[in-house]
Image (cartoon, rainbow, N blue to C red):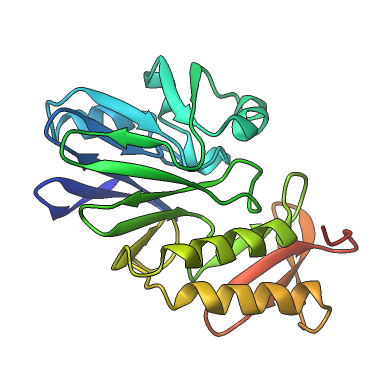
Amino acid sequence: MAEIIKISDSTWRIEDGHVRFFLFCGTSKAALIDSGMTTVDAKEIAKRLTDLPMIMVNTHADPDHIAGNSAFEEFYMAPDEEDNYREHGGKGRLLPICEGDIIDLGGRQLRIIDIPGHTPGSIAILDEKNRILVSGDSVQDGNIFMFGKRRNIVKYVESLEHLLDYDGTYDDIYPMHGTFPQKQNQIPKLIEGAKEIIDGKASGTIVDMFGTDVMLYKFPYAGFLCGIGEKII
């Protein structure tokens, strides 16, 4: 059962096992940011917290982030993520968003930042007024999936370097996995670790993930799960 945790009068986090998602409210509407892994009732959970009109925004489309999407006729997502979404059974009409777009909730603007790498259409969301950066899976202290099709660790590094352009615009990072919240200093650490993997300088351990052997590169601050023998791209 999902655990609902109030952060402020206009912000909640919903813990769904090993993943979380968020409800952000403005004065005119609310945004559900991701919809969890097992929470097909994510919209109903959110409606118990606010009576504002509600929109759905996805940071990306891995299956542990879209369980409740089917309750929405349409959703905001980067177009480069649609193939991933449909492959995992995602329904509804995609409303495209990309770098620089603003979703206005009424006195609360959410700025979209493109951060491909973990998936082709991963985005971060900057809540400028409340100084919050929602990072999806890309910034966290857990094990970041970088194996299988659609992952690109080189683009991932470029995306994190792009996030450095937003230093000073937020105080807390809201990740979908791992310790909540994170701070800005996690980003340079992740860049350093990913670059060590790219350069062949990191040591890993073979682990089983869903019946597939992958390489876990474990650093003090996070881990990366990478394909064995896959070309670094």
